[in-house]
Image 1 (tube, rainbow, N blue to C red):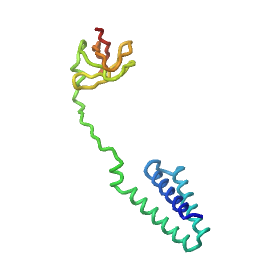
Image 2 (tube, one colour; image 1 turned 90 degrees about the vertical axis):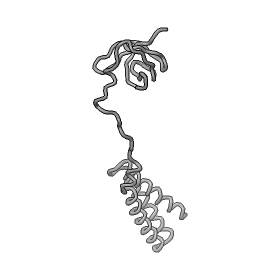
Image 3 (tube, rainbow, N blue to C red; image 1 turned 60 degrees about the vertical axis):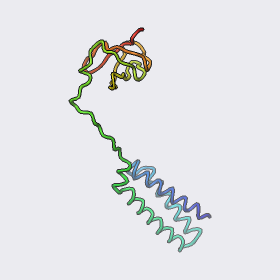
Length: 156
């Protein structure tokens, strides 16, 4: 029996423990599998290398579990994993109310029938009236109802 196999079993157990703590919390397959891998590594070390090596493996495994859990539950770990973007728009800003039928824009994405249009530096969602519009095609605002913009392609 290889020492590498025992170390690999314990490392896979630690990986599954981290997955259990950070990604799928609760008692799940990852948590149960981590216990199976830990147990297999410890049992194999007792079976093939004797009591002393088995005890050392058990103690090092318990220590590595404690260290892994402590690192995974530190606030700094969660800060690295959390989203740090901020929303800078305000509720009072109403760009759509400044638009009028007849205003022209460019389709930023394909519209089949809903997509995005670019008006100046603003990107807003709009709906095509009846036809598919390719990205980059010029469009004209036909009507605005309840903050929803309806456009049609400009024919050149």
